[in-house]
Amino acid sequence: MKHTSNVCRSLAVMAVATFMLSPIPATARPLALAAAIDADKAPKPEAPSDQEYRLGPGDKIRIEVYKDPQLSQSAQIRPDGKITLPLIGDLEATGRTPLELRDSIARQLKEYMTNPVVTVIVVEASAATAYVMGEVNHPGAVTLQGGQLTVLQALAIAGGLKDFANTKNIRILRRSPVGLLQTITFNYKDAIRGAAPVYLRTGDTVVVPD
Image (cartoon, rainbow, N blue to C red; front, top):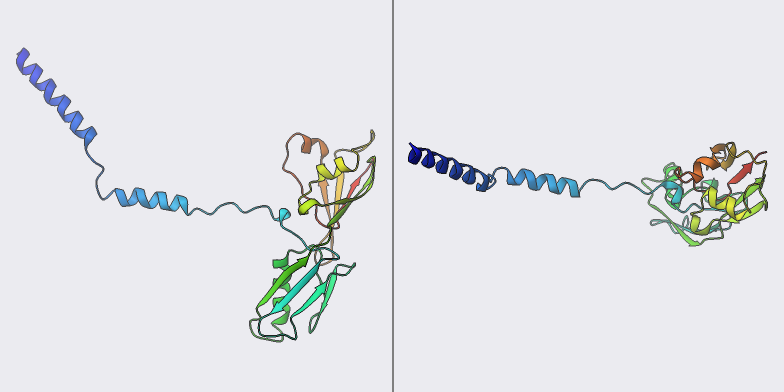
């Protein structure tokens, strides 16, 4: 009996070992490989749009319209934030990215030509500027370094907040590309506790009330 029992145990161990060492079926390999490839191809998150370069007054740009040298020209954004183009007239440029301006020009040129191909090149960027006013120690203009200055950094450059500043009701006044005034609220205490940074754009005004 003991001999029979030992044989049974040996057969059981061999069966388990054989199961553990069995290769993955060939039909399962393509599925695993496909899953790995799909993971590699998963779209990467896009960078925040607030960190993209946005045009501002004084910027020199080159507008190229494919196969139309008369419409292709250089322009400098005026203090009012606009440029003037043939056929289109005045066009708001400040606050837009070069791609947004390109799309706007192409859309308006469709009234005069079929499928216009437009390219907008920033030839020379002026120093982008925002403004801080109200209950700060040094109100005035701040330079947007590389277009990536947060509200918290701008307040630090302005000397910090005064004692009676309303830290929960700071406002950012922003002019949209179509000329509408937007108001964005900013909570200073939330920002210093690690809230997502808010990036300034050219022409923004940060108002710190009391």
